[in-house]
Length: 301
Image (cartoon, rainbow, N blue to C red; front, side, top):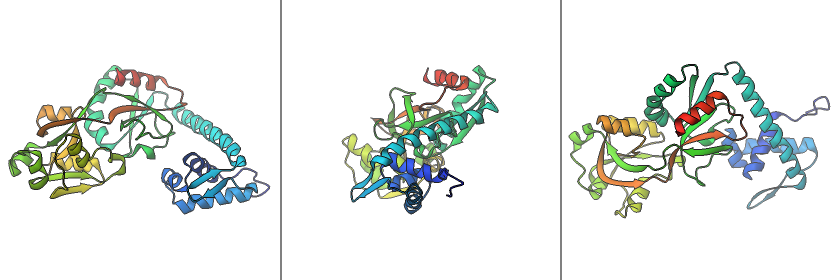
């Protein structure tokens, strides 16, 4: 940064805005796909250029200085306006395109089955699907609407509003008929933990839906299962379940087609009301295009 270039680098401003919003270099780094030290260096570079500190570093976290608070409001507003206008300019090349963000599982199992009805009703709208497992990693400029499971006040990605697509949904233990042919029926929950293979997703975004929680909420006796198949991808585990490799927790409305067709069956009769709802994510402070309005009306109706 020189006198010939009075504006700080955009990377420094983005790091500052994220760190101020989260109150954490670590969380800012997670959002920006940077290390904590890289964010810290960007902030330090910005503070040196401005000639004053923007944060007070305390053992319990970060606090903005008075100058930092004022600068944060300006930077946040300008970055939001820049994101919105960038998204608008990108879309003007094709005003009829609609970009839908979703997890790979929801996109392949549910959304792909529903879209033909929407496309039949709106043949002039071009659909683009962006798959991102964790909605916290979404770039608000890269998509128009998102479809994810949402737990209010717990799984709240920044900058979006959430509207439930299904008002109620339940979670059950499901598997394929092929699995039951190989391993026999699941006679009771206790046997599920000792004789059968449980699919376990290792993903912090899905921590609110675990086997332990499912057992405990249903007042069933829980202990760590004897046999598991673990992965950090719910889509991978669902594909393995369909291939007959184990028993997984699944949302009944999401898997309605597989259950109706018999490619999946309930391994046990117990069901638990889902804490999360399949929801439509809409970026806040975004002008709704005609394709966005049409899809919102269709999916929420």
